[in-house]
Picture 1 (cartoon, rainbow, N blue to C red):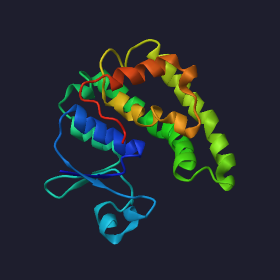
Picture 2: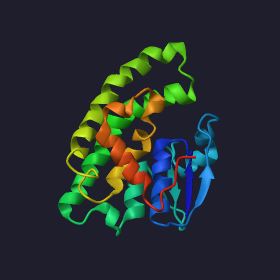
Picture 3: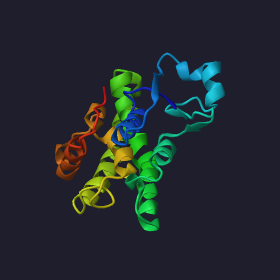
Length: 198
């Protein structure tokens, strides 16, 4: 299988991290989003939405959206939950990540890291801080109760949220106010098959 992505993107990195944790063999194809490589005719034939990450299976079919890819790759592993309830809780956190976390933390990071915090986007960057801290507070509250987001074992819920949380400081979010999140980050990084964002 092939995975198209930008390793500096949290959405792409979390897919790369999962492939390492589960020893999934694949070909990684680096895509430069700033050079509009996701908008070429060749890429748009693979994913009309023009976004990465994108998973290309051996039969020539494609799966887009990072959390959908995580669910596909982790299917039948311990990372997708052990019962109907835990599987639903994983989905709950993945929807939280895409609607309440990523739009604030990832966008603030993009404006600061990728664009260099241009003056014309500074007010947008500052506005993202409120929503980002709200999302981090929700995570902190849960991680005060359990080592991982849905219990004592890592799942793809953790991988989904880890992608952008561990680099949230690059978007202006000081994680020192979230000690349980900091411990959770260390817990994930201590996994023997962990790989860092390059």
